[in-house]
Amino acid sequence: MTATDDDLERIRRALTDRLDALRHTAEATADDRRPVELDQASVGRLSRMDALQMQAMAQATGRRREVEVARIEAALKRIDDGDYGWCVQCGEEIAPKRLAADPTVPTCIDCAAKAG
Image (cartoon, rainbow, N blue to C red; front, side):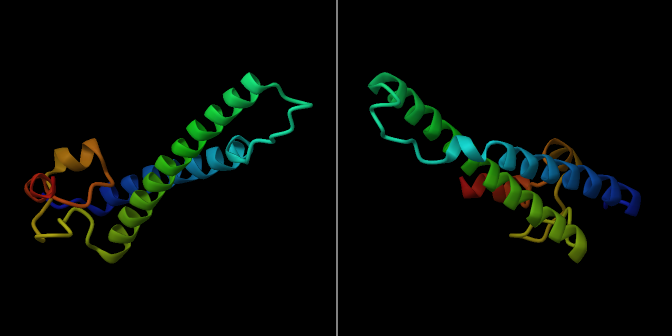
């Protein structure tokens, strides 16, 4: 079952809204990913260690966010190119339930299973 134009527009809006939210969150949390100041006069050793740990967690979250942004942008490009809903590896249609669970998924279940 191929997606209708209305379905694609609804998916595009949902993906665009998610992309906007991710970009807004990235801007709002930019300070959390900045280097930690090593001035012992203003921050004690334990506080600095805590700050380093918080920075590392913020950076990891930022990397996951970047991956999600890339997946969303790729899905939007597939919509624009008319390839959305078709596996990028084998060309077969991706199951609608799979797309409903994750609208950014680029492969059918068989190709995903082969990949790992």
